[in-house]
Picture (spheres, one colour):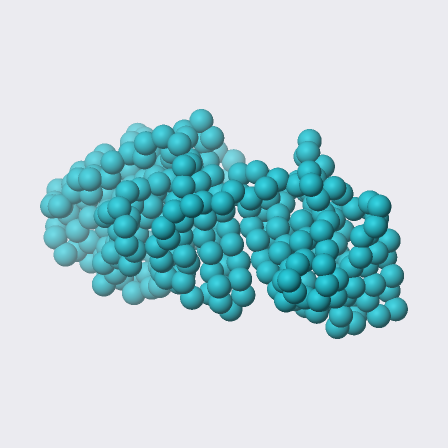
Length: 357
């Protein structure tokens, strides 16, 4: 088989993201190469997630090669055209003055990608990537929490949501068609956010999902779906709030980043004194003056929060004004980006310790 070096490199770089570097099944550490009808199919999988990239080529090939080694070789070759031939468990890779002979694995032992026989629906890739970016940080990293370790794509309500039980992110008004909902694994969502193109064609099967983009390069991603029921988000976000105030985005980000230097577990915000205060057993304490403005002044005087619960959503905002809405010191609070109706974020405050007051 003959192929342009940069095309082969692009395909390997695309699929290697899901290939385990080591494991009990040696074949899974390899990259599958199948060339037929002048088209090369490059595949990688960890059995939970799989990816395929394609490129034009000349000739036939059917083999599995060590993924990391193949990537290192192809990335360092200097000529335009790469030739790969396999015979009796050995692969020869030729390019310009370079000639490698490496071990090949049995193609027949490589996992077969599932074929989902279902009608497809489309999602604009840029829109899905934006929704993932606005929600991914709220996914739980506790593997015992099942559905909370993924993101819930609800076709009926046109939302993508994630929660770890202490905060909730909802990307809404998605341009998708269809009915039903399913839970995407964290890794799947993260890999989807790295793919470039125009529109995903999506198929959903029994416990599986498949995303395909044709342009500018063909990429297919399949994944197992997370079983279980995602918590209902209906009515979770209050409609009315007693206290509403807003910050300048840059001022708030800078203040929280300075506070986070001492790695506190909790930050106390005193609305009357306009101060953030935090302590760390290891590093000491810090106090920051911060300017904010009321839109609706209620009875709220202070509240404590996990700094990560503000720093994470602020990192995906564009700027401008940041609004916080509250109904009490220990009740769920909403953080919003002004003039962004496509995203909602809810977080639980912490109980204020006496020594912080």
